[in-house]
Length: 386
Image (tube, rainbow, N blue to C red; front, side, top):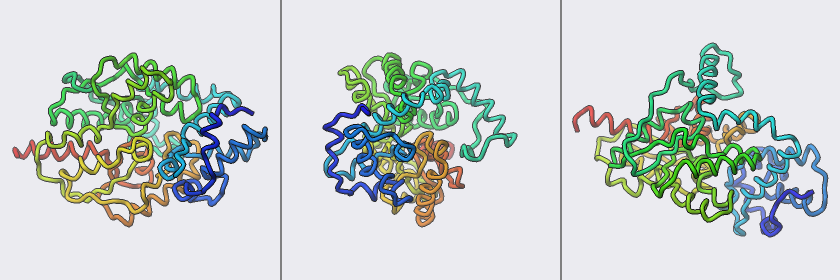
Protein backbone atom coordinates (compact mmCIF):
# COMPACT_ATOMS: atom_id res chain seq x y z
CA UNK A 1 0.00 0.00 0.00
CA UNK A 2 1.21 3.48 -0.82
CA UNK A 3 1.35 5.52 2.38
CA UNK A 4 2.15 8.65 0.39
CA UNK A 5 5.68 8.83 1.81
CA UNK A 6 8.59 10.19 -0.20
CA UNK A 7 10.91 7.15 -0.60
CA UNK A 8 14.03 9.27 -0.08
CA UNK A 9 12.75 10.53 3.26
CA UNK A 10 11.71 7.04 4.29
CA UNK A 11 15.08 5.54 3.40
CA UNK A 12 17.00 8.25 5.25
CA UNK A 13 16.59 6.22 8.46
CA UNK A 14 19.56 3.90 8.99
CA UNK A 15 17.96 2.17 11.99
CA UNK A 16 20.74 3.26 14.37
CA UNK A 17 18.41 3.52 17.36
CA UNK A 18 19.69 6.83 18.71
CA UNK A 19 16.08 8.06 18.68
CA UNK A 20 14.90 5.47 21.19
CA UNK A 21 15.65 7.29 24.43
CA UNK A 22 14.07 10.48 23.06
CA UNK A 23 10.77 8.74 22.29
CA UNK A 24 8.20 8.95 25.12
CA UNK A 25 6.15 5.95 23.99
CA UNK A 26 9.23 3.74 23.77
CA UNK A 27 10.40 4.96 27.18
CA UNK A 28 7.20 3.80 28.86
CA UNK A 29 6.56 0.65 26.79
CA UNK A 30 10.04 -0.66 25.85
CA UNK A 31 8.24 -1.88 22.72
CA UNK A 32 10.26 -1.46 19.51
CA UNK A 33 7.10 -0.95 17.45
CA UNK A 34 6.34 2.09 19.62
CA UNK A 35 9.60 3.81 18.71
CA UNK A 36 10.47 6.01 15.70
CA UNK A 37 12.80 3.33 14.37
CA UNK A 38 10.16 0.65 14.75
CA UNK A 39 7.42 2.75 13.20
CA UNK A 40 9.62 3.61 10.21
CA UNK A 41 10.39 -0.10 9.76
CA UNK A 42 6.64 -0.77 9.70
CA UNK A 43 6.13 2.06 7.17
CA UNK A 44 8.68 0.39 4.90
CA UNK A 45 7.01 -2.99 5.25
CA UNK A 46 3.62 -1.53 4.34
CA UNK A 47 4.71 0.82 1.54
CA UNK A 48 7.56 -1.15 -0.06
CA UNK A 49 6.62 -4.75 0.63
CA UNK A 50 2.83 -4.64 0.74
CA UNK A 51 2.49 -5.78 4.35
CA UNK A 52 -1.11 -5.58 5.58
CA UNK A 53 -2.29 -2.82 7.88
CA UNK A 54 -3.12 -5.13 10.77
CA UNK A 55 -4.60 -3.91 14.03
CA UNK A 56 -1.14 -4.10 15.63
CA UNK A 57 0.46 -2.03 12.87
CA UNK A 58 -2.25 0.61 13.02
CA UNK A 59 -1.94 0.67 16.80
CA UNK A 60 1.79 1.37 16.50
CA UNK A 61 1.08 4.44 14.35
CA UNK A 62 -1.87 5.62 16.47
CA UNK A 63 0.17 5.62 19.66
CA UNK A 64 2.75 8.10 18.31
CA UNK A 65 2.42 11.37 20.25
CA UNK A 66 3.98 13.26 17.30
CA UNK A 67 6.25 15.12 19.72
CA UNK A 68 9.11 14.88 17.18
CA UNK A 69 11.77 14.60 19.87
CA UNK A 70 13.37 11.99 17.62
CA UNK A 71 14.26 14.61 14.99
CA UNK A 72 16.95 16.55 16.89
CA UNK A 73 18.26 13.21 18.24
CA UNK A 74 18.69 11.73 14.75
CA UNK A 75 22.23 12.00 13.24
CA UNK A 76 20.82 11.29 9.76
CA UNK A 77 18.33 14.16 9.85
CA UNK A 78 15.29 11.94 9.31
CA UNK A 79 12.19 14.10 8.90
CA UNK A 80 10.00 11.87 11.00
CA UNK A 81 7.23 14.44 11.29
CA UNK A 82 6.47 14.31 7.58
CA UNK A 83 6.59 10.48 7.62
CA UNK A 84 4.05 10.07 10.41
CA UNK A 85 1.82 12.84 9.03
CA UNK A 86 1.63 11.11 5.64
CA UNK A 87 0.92 7.79 7.35
CA UNK A 88 -1.81 9.31 9.51
CA UNK A 89 -3.42 10.91 6.45
CA UNK A 90 -3.55 7.53 4.70
CA UNK A 91 -5.03 5.86 7.78
CA UNK A 92 -7.64 8.61 8.12
CA UNK A 93 -8.72 8.18 4.49
CA UNK A 94 -9.07 4.40 4.95
CA UNK A 95 -10.99 4.63 8.22
CA UNK A 96 -13.32 7.39 7.12
CA UNK A 97 -11.88 10.53 8.65
CA UNK A 98 -15.33 12.13 8.60
CA UNK A 99 -15.85 11.32 12.29
CA UNK A 100 -12.81 13.30 13.38
CA UNK A 101 -13.55 15.95 10.77
CA UNK A 102 -16.99 16.37 12.33
CA UNK A 103 -15.50 16.51 15.84
CA UNK A 104 -13.01 19.17 14.75
CA UNK A 105 -15.55 21.22 12.77
CA UNK A 106 -16.21 23.75 15.58
CA UNK A 107 -12.52 24.71 15.67
CA UNK A 108 -12.86 26.84 12.54
CA UNK A 109 -16.25 28.26 13.54
CA UNK A 110 -15.66 30.70 16.42
CA UNK A 111 -19.32 31.25 17.35
CA UNK A 112 -20.02 27.52 17.42
CA UNK A 113 -16.85 26.89 19.42
CA UNK A 114 -17.71 29.58 21.95
CA UNK A 115 -21.27 28.29 22.35
CA UNK A 116 -20.05 24.73 22.75
CA UNK A 117 -17.44 25.87 25.25
CA UNK A 118 -20.06 27.61 27.38
CA UNK A 119 -22.15 24.43 27.43
CA UNK A 120 -19.07 22.42 28.31
CA UNK A 121 -18.24 24.89 31.06
CA UNK A 122 -21.74 24.54 32.52
CA UNK A 123 -21.48 20.74 32.32
CA UNK A 124 -18.08 20.94 34.00
CA UNK A 125 -19.52 22.90 36.92
CA UNK A 126 -22.27 20.31 37.23
CA UNK A 127 -19.61 17.56 37.38
CA UNK A 128 -20.88 15.99 34.15
CA UNK A 129 -17.58 16.06 32.22
CA UNK A 130 -15.71 12.70 32.17
CA UNK A 131 -12.39 12.80 34.01
CA UNK A 132 -10.58 11.28 31.02
CA UNK A 133 -10.93 14.62 29.22
CA UNK A 134 -8.50 16.11 31.72
CA UNK A 135 -10.43 19.37 32.13
CA UNK A 136 -9.47 20.32 35.67
CA UNK A 137 -9.06 24.03 34.89
CA UNK A 138 -12.45 25.71 34.61
CA UNK A 139 -13.60 26.63 31.12
CA UNK A 140 -14.77 30.26 31.29
CA UNK A 141 -18.41 31.13 30.73
CA UNK A 142 -17.47 34.71 29.85
CA UNK A 143 -14.40 36.14 28.13
CA UNK A 144 -13.06 39.67 28.29
CA UNK A 145 -12.90 41.13 24.79
CA UNK A 146 -9.66 41.51 22.85
CA UNK A 147 -9.18 44.89 21.20
CA UNK A 148 -6.50 46.05 18.78
CA UNK A 149 -3.99 48.60 20.04
CA UNK A 150 -1.97 49.01 16.85
CA UNK A 151 -0.52 47.27 13.83
CA UNK A 152 3.08 46.48 14.79
CA UNK A 153 2.32 42.78 15.22
CA UNK A 154 -0.49 40.33 14.73
CA UNK A 155 -1.26 38.24 17.83
CA UNK A 156 -2.52 34.84 16.72
CA UNK A 157 -5.49 33.86 18.88
CA UNK A 158 -6.53 30.54 17.31
CA UNK A 159 -9.40 28.32 18.38
CA UNK A 160 -9.41 26.30 21.62
CA UNK A 161 -6.88 28.55 23.34
CA UNK A 162 -8.97 31.63 22.63
CA UNK A 163 -12.15 29.92 23.84
CA UNK A 164 -10.64 28.33 26.97
CA UNK A 165 -7.59 30.48 27.82
CA UNK A 166 -8.49 34.00 26.72
CA UNK A 167 -6.67 35.30 29.83
CA UNK A 168 -3.37 34.15 28.32
CA UNK A 169 -4.04 36.25 25.21
CA UNK A 170 -4.90 39.27 27.34
CA UNK A 171 -1.69 38.83 29.34
CA UNK A 172 0.33 38.39 26.16
CA UNK A 173 -1.09 41.55 24.66
CA UNK A 174 -0.31 43.55 27.79
CA UNK A 175 3.30 42.33 27.82
CA UNK A 176 3.77 43.16 24.14
CA UNK A 177 2.30 46.60 24.72
CA UNK A 178 4.60 47.11 27.73
CA UNK A 179 7.48 46.55 25.32
CA UNK A 180 6.06 49.27 23.08
CA UNK A 181 4.33 47.23 20.38
CA UNK A 182 0.86 47.87 19.00
CA UNK A 183 -1.04 44.58 18.85
CA UNK A 184 -3.79 43.39 16.54
CA UNK A 185 -5.49 40.12 17.62
CA UNK A 186 -6.25 37.88 14.65
CA UNK A 187 -9.74 36.87 15.86
CA UNK A 188 -12.18 35.45 13.33
CA UNK A 189 -9.87 36.36 10.46
CA UNK A 190 -7.77 33.29 11.28
CA UNK A 191 -9.88 31.11 13.59
CA UNK A 192 -7.80 27.90 13.42
CA UNK A 193 -4.27 27.07 12.23
CA UNK A 194 -5.05 23.42 11.43
CA UNK A 195 -2.50 21.89 13.82
CA UNK A 196 -4.94 19.35 15.27
CA UNK A 197 -6.11 18.44 11.78
CA UNK A 198 -2.55 17.68 10.68
CA UNK A 199 -2.06 15.45 13.74
CA UNK A 200 -5.31 13.61 13.00
CA UNK A 201 -4.40 12.99 9.36
CA UNK A 202 -7.01 15.41 7.98
CA UNK A 203 -4.62 16.77 5.36
CA UNK A 204 -7.10 18.43 2.99
CA UNK A 205 -8.85 20.26 5.81
CA UNK A 206 -5.50 21.40 7.22
CA UNK A 207 -4.55 22.80 3.81
CA UNK A 208 -7.87 24.66 3.55
CA UNK A 209 -7.39 26.18 7.01
CA UNK A 210 -3.81 27.19 6.16
CA UNK A 211 -5.00 29.05 3.08
CA UNK A 212 -7.77 30.72 5.06
CA UNK A 213 -5.27 31.82 7.71
CA UNK A 214 -2.89 33.23 5.10
CA UNK A 215 -5.72 35.17 3.46
CA UNK A 216 -6.82 36.51 6.84
CA UNK A 217 -3.40 37.88 7.85
CA UNK A 218 -2.15 40.02 4.94
CA UNK A 219 0.83 42.35 4.98
CA UNK A 220 4.29 41.81 6.35
CA UNK A 221 3.83 42.42 10.10
CA UNK A 222 5.19 39.67 12.38
CA UNK A 223 2.67 37.07 13.48
CA UNK A 224 3.32 36.49 17.19
CA UNK A 225 2.08 33.20 18.64
CA UNK A 226 1.76 32.16 22.29
CA UNK A 227 0.76 28.53 21.68
CA UNK A 228 3.69 26.25 20.84
CA UNK A 229 1.55 23.86 18.81
CA UNK A 230 -0.02 26.63 16.73
CA UNK A 231 3.34 28.29 16.20
CA UNK A 232 4.88 25.07 14.93
CA UNK A 233 1.97 24.50 12.53
CA UNK A 234 2.10 28.07 11.20
CA UNK A 235 5.87 27.86 10.71
CA UNK A 236 5.39 24.70 8.63
CA UNK A 237 2.88 26.07 6.14
CA UNK A 238 5.69 26.10 3.58
CA UNK A 239 5.98 22.34 3.93
CA UNK A 240 2.21 21.79 4.12
CA UNK A 241 1.33 23.84 1.02
CA UNK A 242 4.66 23.70 -0.81
CA UNK A 243 4.39 27.23 -2.25
CA UNK A 244 6.62 30.29 -2.11
CA UNK A 245 3.67 32.26 -0.72
CA UNK A 246 3.31 29.82 2.17
CA UNK A 247 7.04 29.87 2.87
CA UNK A 248 7.00 33.68 2.94
CA UNK A 249 4.04 33.61 5.33
CA UNK A 250 5.78 31.14 7.65
CA UNK A 251 8.83 33.39 7.76
CA UNK A 252 6.66 36.03 9.48
CA UNK A 253 5.65 33.66 12.30
CA UNK A 254 7.46 33.94 15.62
CA UNK A 255 6.83 32.54 19.09
CA UNK A 256 6.02 35.32 21.55
CA UNK A 257 8.95 34.47 23.84
CA UNK A 258 11.22 34.27 20.80
CA UNK A 259 10.00 37.71 19.76
CA UNK A 260 10.30 39.31 23.19
CA UNK A 261 13.77 37.83 23.81
CA UNK A 262 14.97 40.09 20.98
CA UNK A 263 13.40 43.10 22.69
CA UNK A 264 13.67 42.20 26.38
CA UNK A 265 15.51 45.45 27.03
CA UNK A 266 12.30 47.29 26.08
CA UNK A 267 10.37 45.76 28.99
CA UNK A 268 10.30 47.73 32.27
CA UNK A 269 12.67 46.76 35.07
CA UNK A 270 10.55 45.50 37.96
CA UNK A 271 10.81 43.70 41.28
CA UNK A 272 10.89 39.94 40.47
CA UNK A 273 8.08 37.75 41.74
CA UNK A 274 9.07 35.58 44.71
CA UNK A 275 8.62 32.42 42.69
CA UNK A 276 10.74 29.38 41.94
CA UNK A 277 9.65 28.59 38.39
CA UNK A 278 10.35 25.33 36.55
CA UNK A 279 10.17 25.60 32.77
CA UNK A 280 8.38 22.79 30.97
CA UNK A 281 9.30 22.84 27.30
CA UNK A 282 6.37 21.99 25.02
CA UNK A 283 7.63 19.56 22.39
CA UNK A 284 6.61 21.74 19.47
CA UNK A 285 8.53 24.66 20.93
CA UNK A 286 11.66 22.67 21.78
CA UNK A 287 11.86 20.07 19.02
CA UNK A 288 10.04 21.67 16.09
CA UNK A 289 10.51 25.43 16.48
CA UNK A 290 13.81 25.04 18.40
CA UNK A 291 12.77 28.20 20.28
CA UNK A 292 12.66 27.06 23.91
CA UNK A 293 15.66 28.99 25.21
CA UNK A 294 13.94 32.40 24.76
CA UNK A 295 11.41 31.35 27.40
CA UNK A 296 14.21 31.48 29.97
CA UNK A 297 15.54 34.76 28.59
CA UNK A 298 12.17 36.42 29.03
CA UNK A 299 11.26 34.85 32.39
CA UNK A 300 14.49 35.29 34.35
CA UNK A 301 14.22 39.05 35.00
CA UNK A 302 10.71 38.61 36.41
CA UNK A 303 11.04 35.71 38.89
CA UNK A 304 13.24 34.93 41.87
CA UNK A 305 14.53 31.68 40.36
CA UNK A 306 14.15 29.87 37.05
CA UNK A 307 15.04 26.17 37.28
CA UNK A 308 15.39 23.35 34.77
CA UNK A 309 13.72 19.95 34.79
CA UNK A 310 16.13 17.01 34.62
CA UNK A 311 14.35 15.04 31.86
CA UNK A 312 15.96 16.78 28.85
CA UNK A 313 12.65 17.97 27.49
CA UNK A 314 10.84 14.63 27.52
CA UNK A 315 7.23 14.92 26.31
CA UNK A 316 4.50 15.37 28.95
CA UNK A 317 2.02 13.21 27.01
CA UNK A 318 -0.51 15.90 26.03
CA UNK A 319 0.03 15.78 22.25
CA UNK A 320 -2.95 17.93 21.22
CA UNK A 321 -5.90 15.52 21.37
CA UNK A 322 -3.60 12.59 22.22
CA UNK A 323 -4.38 12.68 25.96
CA UNK A 324 -8.07 12.19 25.13
CA UNK A 325 -7.58 9.56 22.41
CA UNK A 326 -4.85 7.63 24.25
CA UNK A 327 -5.42 8.38 27.95
CA UNK A 328 -3.57 5.32 29.22
CA UNK A 329 -0.34 5.98 27.34
CA UNK A 330 -0.63 9.74 27.91
CA UNK A 331 -0.95 9.14 31.64
CA UNK A 332 2.13 6.89 31.76
CA UNK A 333 4.18 9.48 29.88
CA UNK A 334 2.94 12.24 32.19
CA UNK A 335 4.07 10.28 35.25
CA UNK A 336 7.68 10.68 34.14
CA UNK A 337 7.18 14.42 33.76
CA UNK A 338 5.55 14.63 37.19
CA UNK A 339 8.53 12.87 38.74
CA UNK A 340 10.87 15.40 37.15
CA UNK A 341 8.72 18.30 38.37
CA UNK A 342 8.68 16.80 41.87
CA UNK A 343 12.46 16.69 41.95
CA UNK A 344 12.67 20.36 40.87
CA UNK A 345 10.32 21.46 43.69
CA UNK A 346 8.99 24.58 41.94
CA UNK A 347 6.30 26.96 43.16
CA UNK A 348 4.86 26.95 39.66
CA UNK A 349 5.55 25.36 36.28
CA UNK A 350 5.75 27.60 33.21
CA UNK A 351 4.40 26.03 30.02
CA UNK A 352 3.90 27.84 26.72
CA UNK A 353 1.29 25.48 25.29
CA UNK A 354 -2.39 25.08 26.25
CA UNK A 355 -2.48 21.30 25.79
CA UNK A 356 0.53 20.77 28.04
CA UNK A 357 -0.78 23.11 30.70
CA UNK A 358 -4.20 21.44 30.83
CA UNK A 359 -2.69 17.94 30.85
CA UNK A 360 -0.36 18.80 33.73
CA UNK A 361 -3.02 20.76 35.63
CA UNK A 362 -5.28 17.70 35.50
CA UNK A 363 -2.62 15.91 37.57
CA UNK A 364 -2.58 18.67 40.18
CA UNK A 365 0.39 20.69 38.93
CA UNK A 366 0.30 24.48 39.34
CA UNK A 367 0.87 25.62 35.75
CA UNK A 368 0.94 29.09 34.20
CA UNK A 369 1.85 30.45 30.80
CA UNK A 370 5.16 32.40 30.83
CA UNK A 371 3.31 35.50 29.62
CA UNK A 372 0.96 35.33 32.61
CA UNK A 373 3.94 35.30 34.97
CA UNK A 374 5.64 38.26 33.25
CA UNK A 375 2.33 40.14 33.10
CA UNK A 376 1.75 39.65 36.83
CA UNK A 377 5.18 41.05 37.65
CA UNK A 378 4.58 44.08 35.43
CA UNK A 379 1.14 44.76 36.88
CA UNK A 380 2.23 44.42 40.50
CA UNK A 381 5.07 46.82 39.84
CA UNK A 382 2.71 49.32 38.20
CA UNK A 383 0.34 49.16 41.20
CA UNK A 384 3.24 49.73 43.56
CA UNK A 385 4.27 52.76 41.53
CA UNK A 386 7.71 51.41 40.80
